[in-house]
Length: 274
Ligand SMILES: [Zn+2]
Image (cartoon, rainbow, N blue to C red; front, side):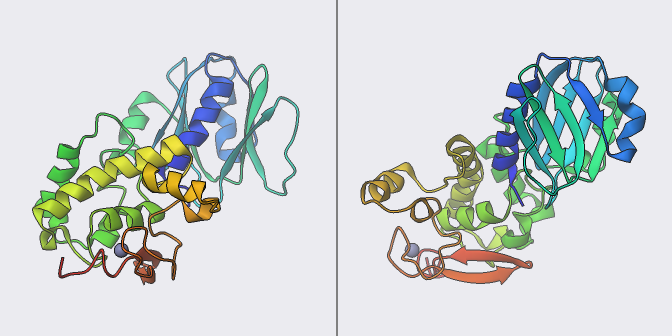
């Protein structure tokens, strides 16, 4: 599933195509059709993302909301040109030069300002890691919060109510950077580990957003690129690198499954004795 950084990059594309324009609207998903008259003729004033949801804000204060889950996808194309796909088109918004086509998504709604505040998904989100108002102290405060302190980090880091915008690859990467064994709870960590985790919770998603998916530190990226290695070798610290040498200590990266999702770690850098 795309994580916060991928959703944000997708909404940036939508914003570039649509903001400031009155789009031609097609709503093919039945639950949206009653809203056609409410949205048609309205200018799009902003496009944003919150955690894994995208929001298209119209001038009359209605917001088109969607959560792409595992299968939904936006495609932005030159107006009139259709991508080759067998997916089901749910809606299209056509700006002057480009149009945005949403396929397969089924979690869709049109929300009033009041509904935006009380929406079941949006209202339970924790602080968003891509929101520049979220700082290290905020994250550290949550790691010390009795509501979260006793939960396993491998589960907590996927809970959008704890921090919004994290997901499976970021989970492995953050635990590695903070030198934390994957089955630890916040209460098992030293203050140094918690501080490092709080910093990684913001730095890694923001780096991934800025670089289209890299979480590895720039000095390693440059070194491996210069050595002619392919992108998969310099994208992540540990994620999807089972059996490859750790970038820090050369120990082979291991894979496990925690909370039903794959997790990668370095048994030396994330050892309990550290
Ligand atoms: Zn290592």
